[in-house]
Length: 180
Image 1 (tube, one colour):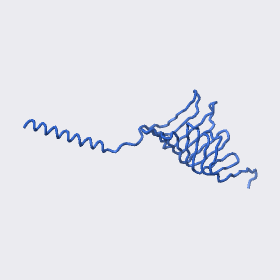
Image 2 (cartoon, one colour):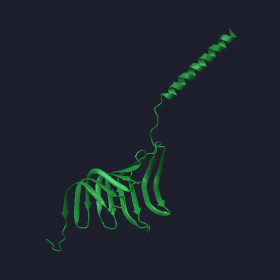
Image 3 (cartoon, one colour):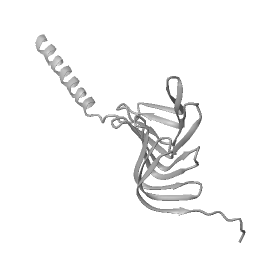
Image 4 (cartoon, one colour):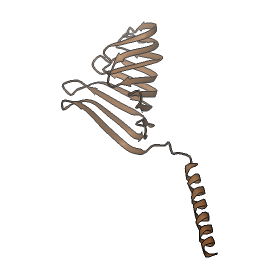
C-alpha cells in the first residue's frame, strides 16, 4: 500500500508538471522591441573619416535586427573634408534588416546643401550599401528657380544627381522686384 501511495503521488506530480509546461508553451510570444534607446547619435566612418551621422530622439531595436525610429530621424552625409553636403529627415523611420535599407515615412525631406535642391515626399528608401535613395511615391524638388514634380525617384544619397521616374512638370520661378 505504501508503494501504491508513492506511485500515485509521483503520477500526480508528473501530470501537474506536464499541464504547467503546456500552459507555458501556449503563452503568446513577445514581438516588441528587445532594446529601447533615447537621444541616439550614430556615426559611420570609412578610414577614420565620418561619412554619415544619424540622430533620433528614440530608437527601438528588435530581435530580428529591424529598428524603428518612432519619433523621427535625421541623417547628415559628409564629404571627404568632413563637411555636411546633404541631409535627410523623416517623421518616422525603419531599418529593415532583411533588405538592408532604411525607410523614411511622413514628411521626408532631403536637402543638398551645396546646390540648395530640396526633395519632399511621403516615403523614401535609403540603401546605405549602394548609397542611393529612391521612392515610387509623388515627389517635389525645389531648386533655386525651378520646381520639379513627378512620381518615383532615384538619386545618390548626396542628392546631387537624381532622376524623376514619371515627371509631371517643371515650373520656372521668376523673381520680380515689383511690389503689387
